Length: 327
Ligand SMILES: [Zn+2]
Image 1 (cartoon, helix red, strand yellow):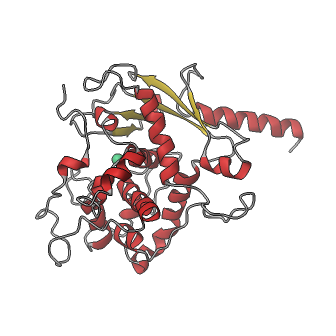
Image 2 (image 1 turned 135 degrees about the vertical axis):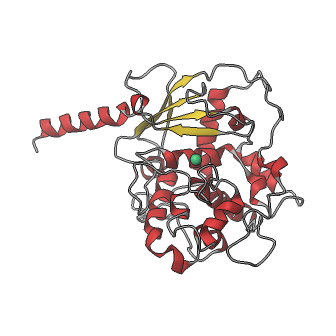
Image 3 (image 1 turned 180 degrees about the vertical axis):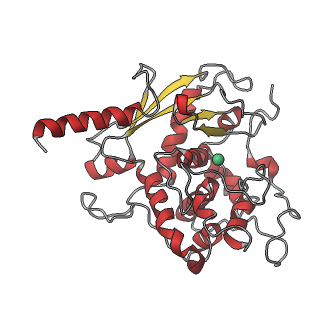
């Protein structure tokens, strides 16, 4: 390929990468973030390469907290996710890092509880690793990517006060993420670590919910970022824990059920965004506090786990909120 053609290809590639979510081009509201991967390999000299654009409805005041800057809270959640899921941690030579940017011990407690035993994860491990690498690096090509984010709920899916966000795949607007009121009531990562590590809650992963987990979840839904395992579908969907499409595996105990029970298919954990969110937060707690938050667990030793018998008793801390009622 000639140099001119190469340049043209790069330009077209860049244009496509940035056109994925915003056909109208850039605007002054755009927020740029340097991906962890570039930052580490290039000492931050390349970038910014992630563009968050759109922001429809994000200037509408939050009824609970009128001083809240929603745009800043969305950016903060992304940056917290970069902290929660670091790339190439403790690598001696960042210019020559190992292939996997997020190190996984497939036999530690967190990996076994959220993804399944070593035998069971077999054919899905490489896919899970690919997704974890993506979350750690936030890269999908050499140029970067653009994502449409908004707060005006165009699909009317922000129904409950705990609804945090959803990713829409409507063709006319490309993939985009909408942030609901519940997202803004979640803690930042440092606050979640402090709150969860109190003696009362310490062992329960639910107590560590944060904006960073929501971001990790939603990025996996984005078609050009999350990689589907085994199934033939265009993007990752939330796995179900029964044949009822309303029963998606969101709660921590539901994600563990995907990894333990014989009923769901083996690819379940690999294709379930909240599995990754809980797993990476558990690993972050292990790193910062030196223990594994092993709860919630089932109250009996029957198998498959009795999904409908034991509800999470920590509903009140699942969505730590300064505004408990929706106005
Ligand atoms: Zn989801």
